[in-house]
Image 1: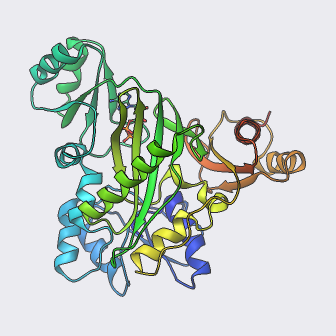
Image 2 (image 1 turned 180 degrees about the vertical axis):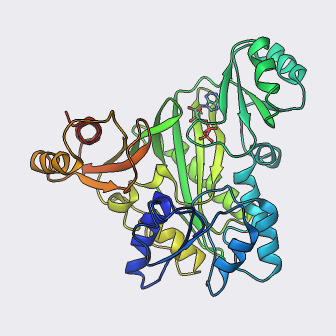
Amino acid sequence: MVGGGQLARMTHQAAISLGQSLRVLSESPDDSAALVAADVRIGTHTDLAALREFAKGCEALTFDHEHVPTAHIEALEAEGVKVFPGSKALVFAQDKGLMRERLTSAPTPRWRRVTDVSDISDFAAETGWPVIAKATRGGYDGKGVWVLDDAAAAAELVATGTPLIVEEKVRLKRELAALVARSPFGQVAAYPVVETVQKDGICVEVLAPAPGLPEDLAVRAQQLAIDLANELGVVGLLAVELFETDEGIFVNELAMRPHNSGHWTIEGARTSQFEQHLRAVLDYPMGETSLTAPAVVMANVLGGEPGGISIDERLHHLFAEDPGARVHLYGKQVRPGRKIGHVTVLGDDMTKVRARAARAARWLQEGK
Ligand code: ADP
């Protein structure tokens, strides 16, 4: 797996049970996955020579992020490396402009490519301000997304030279995610559709299944994700981030790797997304995706302000208060606002489960 973040760390955990060894290409020995995997190579994903050396002897090459240059992936494929997802599919998770151009059959917010500031002003003349501008490549956790209130803000952003698209600010009822996995053989498995709750562009909570989602909408969202996986030839996981609006569901973006909206599956589904991703890239049959409890909530733990009681003490108190809370810490240096772990709580009643998960995450975050 290229990238040594928490997704690689949790994939490594799943690989152990399958008797597989996950080799990790990590930028630093202190990265989340590099701290725990046995086979770690230090190098950067933008270095083709490092990628080539890394891929030698691997059964399959896959990713913990989408930042490997497309040309490098194509070069590896041309040399016979089995890359999953392949460059032809992955490019649609890497580049928001190409993705929007490709998704002609799926509903998306109105959008336009930006080459000049007038592209934004003309677009806003049709939709009204504010509009949303997005970097076509390299964004994550809301970095690379800007709300533009007027032409002056647009001019300032365009002057930075970042390649952009602009899109209408959708009136969201809420955000959903549909997660599927597809193997080279073509088998596809779909997880229950979840609700994702964002704060400042960062996912803070995931509710599984999405509360009150009508069955027909849920099935439509799953079918949309399955169709996209098939159409794009995805191998591995495909997370489709969706907006629920009064006019139906819109596709926001695609990720082709384990995804924050699927962390709940470790305890909340019969097969975790990390195992499912490995099964898919190794062309094993897919695992069962059903829920293990009627209500599952995952809450991210973000780094809090320095000081206060130690993480060790926080765990001690949390486990004393809520023995059912399941904790995953990523071994990352604490910085305010950085994702350093998550908690998952299972139960019968979504309201109660949600309150427990929020309390557990806040406790780990703030120590109070
Ligand atoms: P990233 O790649 O950083 O995850 P996203 O495209 O998912 O960026 O946008 C981050 C968040 O910004 C979304 O989860 C949503 O809350 C908000 N957002 C993005 N696009 C729109 C839009 N067109 N209308 C309203 N809100 C949006």
